[in-house]
Length: 448
Image (cartoon, rainbow, N blue to C red):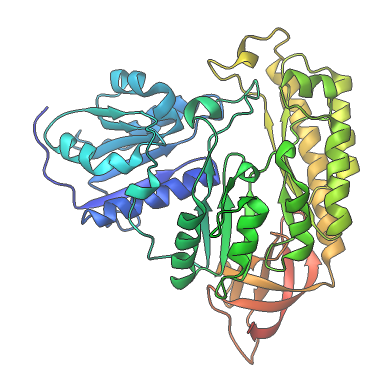
């Protein structure tokens, strides 16, 4: 393959979870440090990075579709790199099937993009799906730009080995980033304008480390240390596993004012038999009792979860147990999916694969139940006064959208005495609720 002129512009397109969003931002920073600039909206880029997700079925096929759409009218293509979990799982096949792809890089190796880019410019096709012992984070540029809300990866990988999940194979074993590195990165984000930081991890509450005095701490200790940063106003974390929800972390929800009253705690199913087949190592009852403990210290907490319908062998009666758990919990929001067999996972070869039409029908019923639950939570919020972090303009003139402490989408209009701006923390009263958002009335300018 002939040599390629050095790219001047780039675009990173991320799919999937918030971890991928974070990784996409870091890859963009890495490319920017090499002198590339982000392509303008709607303009072609010299280099396109497809940062992929492998959780759902047909994820790889979506990659090939995206690659095809990058082909230009003259038959040429930009430099294409495939990154993320599909790259990790199916890198060799991607190289074989998609000649336009010049680089394949896994989620633990993207700090090597600059040297891979140099190789690609020399006409080579390069793959790096190693999971090196040295951390990628030390090789990434320091973060100097941020919006009002920022992601901070604190933990990666998973040791739980749920039978449906590819994460242990694509992201590796559970590892925690060092405490000092996280405090330093959070300080830089706050200096760059971040008022809110969301701590990320495949099992974020499995984070462990040593604080500045050498004492062993868990995620609650990290949260308490971050809360001491004066410029930081809000802290969130996701995604958690029920087995790692310690009493210290529960207590932090009562004791740390900056920790927002929101908990994303996936359960996946309401049937104990299904949960055991998933290797979830908790029961529906233990999950509900755990939520009781959280609500005991933070009664207003908003709960979120993940659900899979149609797991192999799931009966109608077992699905009814999931609906009963939704009813008992009262979720503020939740994510629900049809079971998707992932190659190499134990569940993919289990007996009793559920028919697609059965999964479709169950998913519709589950999502209807979750929407009722979300609407009920939002309706119960009407009349509350709270702070909203302004994220973007709304569709109407003078309208703004932001997030409440309970991670609700809130829209409100400017008032004659003042206007909001992106990045402001403003005080509002929630006045009207729908299943997906609330309307509010602006009460005061930016909170002090």
